[in-house]
Every structure is written in C-alpha cells, then in structure tokens.
Image (cartoon, rainbow over all chains, first blue to last red; front, side):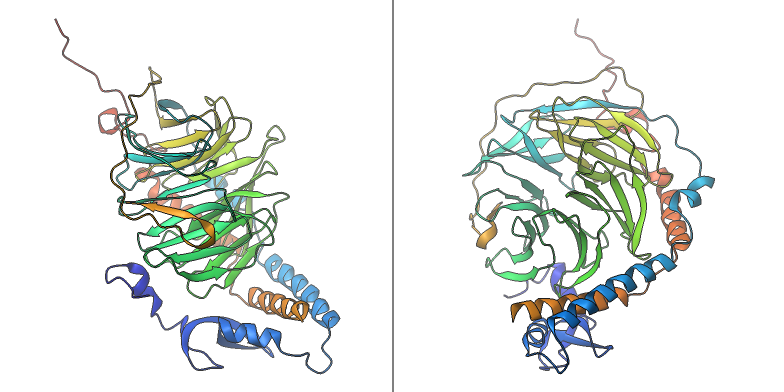
Amino acid sequence: VQPQPDAKMCDQTFLAITFGPCDNCSQNKPLMNIYLKNEPINYCSLCVEMMACQGLAKGETIHTLKAESESLKSKLEEERAKLHDVELHQVAEKMEALGQFVMKTRRTLKGHGNKVLCMDWCRDKRRIVSSSQDGKVIVWDAYTTNKEHAVTMPCTWVMACAYAPSGCAVACGSDEEKSIQYVVLLYVFVILTSSGDGTCALWDVESGQLLQSFHGHSADVLSLDLAPSETGNTFVSGGCDKKANVWDMRSGQNVQSFETHESDINSVKYYPSGDAFASGSDDATCRLYDLRADREVAIYSKESIIFGASSVDFSLSGRLLFAGHNDYTINVWDVLKGTRVAILFGHENRVSTVRVSPDGTAFCSGSWDNTLRMKVKGLAVVIGVLHHPVVSAPRAAGELRNIGHSFPVIYS
Amino acid sequence: MAKIADARKTVEQLKLEVNIDRMMVSKAAAELMAYCESHAKEDPLLTPVPSSENPFREKKIFCAIL
C-alpha cells in the first residue's frame, strides 16, 4: 500500500519506537513489546505468533502456564492498588460546585423512519450524519434542520456512521454478516472498525486491505474511540466481555486492559486531554479510567438509575459527562466530583447515541423514537420542534467499496 | 497446541500489563482537575456564550412585515 503523501498516518508509521528491526528476524516491521525470561524485547507480530506456537519447554505444561497467569493477575492488582492513595472526588472537593444546569431542546431532527442508532458531527460544527434501523444514512444541517443528503444502504440496522475529518466523506457499517458495531473514520484513507466477532480492524480504504487487526476481546466489541492527540496512535475499545482495552494502532498490541464493569460496555470515550476515558454500560453505571494511574478512578451511579447507559460523551473541558440511557433519559455528571448535575428528558424511547458538537456549543442525542434532539445550555423560552422538507437526492457517489468482512461503505 | 499458544500469549500480555509505569491517583487526579480548570472558560456548556454567538439560539427579529 503506497502511503498517501498528506495522510498523517504515514508520518507516524516510521517512528523508531514501535517500528524497526525485529529482535528475532531483523525485518523492519511494527513491533510488539514482550518479555522473554523477564527481559524486555521487541518482536514483530509474526515472530510473536511463532514463539507462542513452539513446543513446550522443559518443565512447562498448560498447568504451569495457567498458574503463571493467575499469579500475574494477582500481581497486577497489587501493583494497581499501591497507587490508590486517594479518590478523585476527594481531590475534587476543593473545586467550585457547578451552577444550576439548564438545557433545552433546540432542534429536533425528524425524518428517520425507524430507530436512530448512531450519529456523528462534522468538523464544521454544523453538519450531522445519522444512521438508522430503516437502512438510511442522512446528513443534516443542524442549524436549519434541513436534510442535505439521504442514502439508502442495501441493508437495515445501520449500526454505525462517522464523518471523515475532511468533511468530504462518511462511513457507515451495518449489522450484516460479521456485523460492524462501531466505526471511526480516521482520515479518508484509513478506517478503524470494531466487530461482533470480537476483533477490531484497521483498513486502507483505497485498496480495501487489512492493515492491522486487534485481538483481545472475547465477545462483540461495541464501541471504539480514538485518542484525541494529534500525534496519538492509540484507541480504546469496549465490549460485551465487560472489558475496556487500550490498543497501539501500529503494532496491534493491547497495552492496557480494564475489567470492572458488571455487564456489557456499550460506549467508550476519551477524556479531552487523552489521559483518561469514560465508559457506559448495561450495568447502569458509567466509569472513568485514568490511563496513567492504570485504574478506575470514578463511578457515576445512583440507586435510582437502573437502566443501561448506551452512549457517553464529554463536554469540551471534560468537566461534564453526558450519558444516554435506555430509560429514555440523559444523565449529566460532574466528572470530578462524581455527582449528577442534571437529568434531561425529551426522548420517547431509549437514547442510543449522544455526541457533543466539535466546538462544544451543543450536544445531539439520537433515539429509538426515530429523532435526534439538540440541546444547548442556558435560559430558553422556546423549545423548537421542527418538521422537515422533502429529502434531497444523494449527490453522485464516488466509487462504492465493500471492504472485507466488515462491510463499511464509503460515500464521497 | 492452540491452547498452549493461547496460554503463552496470555502470560506475555499479563507480563506487559504488570510492567507498565504507573502514576499515583492523587497526581493523576490533580492533572485531570487542572485540565478542566484551564479549559472551563472555553466550554460553552459550562460557561454559556451570549445568545448572539450561539448558532442554535433563536435570534431576535426586529423587523415585522406590515
């Protein structure tokens, strides 16, 4: 695959740290860090596989390996516990409390014929793409509520959709075959997907080639988020195995893993600084995991909240966490103090997706009641519920490509 | 054979996770707070912007059709 000259992905591929000569085969490849006899070494993924498949060494049995696993798991818990000197909300006690939180629905986007499953904002802070069980992907102008494009997918349950950073393309994935659950469009040239088969995959859009696969979840991977930094090369995934994993995109390595939720993780989202991430789960809680402390540092829950959280997102500063739930509400949390600052009502069915706009002025929620609603903070007199004009025809598509097993389709 | 390969990979994965560098929660929490505080003014959902700058607010209309 020839790297495109202006795709940022290429600049990162040649950083020395995780790309270089393998300690075993000497070929230049993305490297994984492993420990052989307690010495850190760098092997390419092929050599790691081969090493794992070699015959048993002297004294090694499946039982000794399992015992070693168990003892390492205990050691991991011990190491993590050593750093647990204080709770986040205790440190946050000295912060000023947030004022009264008032948000009103400003726009309601009607036009989907069935449940809204996913949405994403365009970087122009104005356009939104949404996908639905009715098989349609619609691009809206959020300011005017007009539909700009509507595309009918050759399937129903369009589980995922995402806007390209350039704003020129959208990607969507459906619940067919090996079912894409979540899509993040990195650049028009590369796409990251997660699947019902428990893996995540990185694809080159031009050639349809699989660049890297990520194995570590033992059940459907329901959500992905990319680290926010410009030079970031990690992403976090959450799945039905109750685990949230952090991955190195170039080597395919699982660098950190968190298993504290009691049920499926439906949504993961990075804190804006990239040092932490939040998760929303069917266990009715949201949690915050700090990547440098390598542990869960907050739980957002209440006895009165018993329905699963389907989607989470942070406000621009990271102080607020919005969580959409299956009881049709959206809970708003003070991330640092751990308290709930508001409950938002308005949807008539479960909330499937919440996303804050790129400039932080509003957030949009999509629901199984077939609508998307937009909320903006502050005093309000009128709640706008607008009906929409006729769906416009889709513009002429570039080439449509079916890519491998996971069926994302790119329109540009 | 596959079981041995899987068990070995699990052991390698755990060794990796045990050996990462970690920070005390107090320090990590302080940094999360510092980020929030330094970005609070730019967060329109925290510090509301005037209606005139908010594209989603209704704008007052000063002319009427006679």
